[in-house]
Length: 488
Image (cartoon, rainbow, N blue to C red; front, side, top):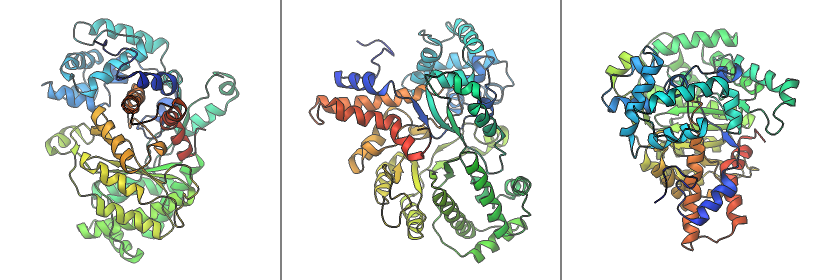
């Protein structure tokens, strides 16, 4: 019987253990899609306690605490409760998360950050609280955490109206002589913004869209009177993001828009939105398609990577959204049809010679093979912006959100391997809001090595460490560095 979370955790063959310990474990982290705070990195935040870094903002934990019958989330997620009360509520929940990935993640994080091997429960919680808090105060500021886990590169997620002042401070700090002279064994993390213009598409929600439009006017210093001036403002912000090192955009969509329209028709829809007139679903579809093609052209011109997070069903409880606001853990997998609209959107971009590098993320496990085969249909060619890339132009991205667990990771790797090239895969990203999430890269790497190692043991892959070791190292970071063109 293997010990829980031993050195060979999830590694069920000698080959898997050799691949992980010899090739995967030492690779630096490339976290190309996160929701981490650039301000926390710029200010080298030092968290006061375990609740601040571990409970705040983590809707995975909030969902589990609710499922255990705790009154949530206002007191234990928004910070109204005392930090220790929030932590002890999580400690009471953890023993009930057996077979949920939260059980693995929780104890991996306690071990890797604090060297704590005790199981978290109400009995062990007081001592764990004291020990972890002491280390947070003494040894684990944000930048110390990034160095500890050898994070070479990470990308944040930023609205076009963000001023990116924190990113500017990070660039200045990393360029300072003291930064260049310190920590010679590892460079300072390469921290980049990501352009996420979702709110530009939400013109059928005037309560959200119009205040955001005012912010865009102010930050761009462009008098937005109509669609052309709106596009000018978005392009100006896109250019500004590029000056501060941005190399990727991101869109969170129910599904792709795929009903082309002229700029004149899109202008009419935009004018209706500004006048707070009702927007029909057909008008929203046409306007959305026009704008997503516009964004595709911007990304292709700059050589950026476009990420599409498709299919989540968000804020499904209207009562909870009214009480707690959006993004509080009341989301579900969406069962929307994806294939037709996604292929149409990619085809429209390719026909306009504006298909950027792109990562496709599916919310519904039913879409694994659909997305993997669509990605394989749009690879380097005469009309593709990324024809000289060494990795696949359109990537079937890693398991996302509810699929970011052992079975979901294996299913994604199997689908990609079966109909595409695993060797060109850009690998894992955390999509996290917590600086405690970096061990999820280790979790992914162990699963990857176990999958490959098992096939070697069964004679399905050659027992060639040179060949397989390069495969593992590429997936663990090298492919992502080359694909995003940063951090190398």
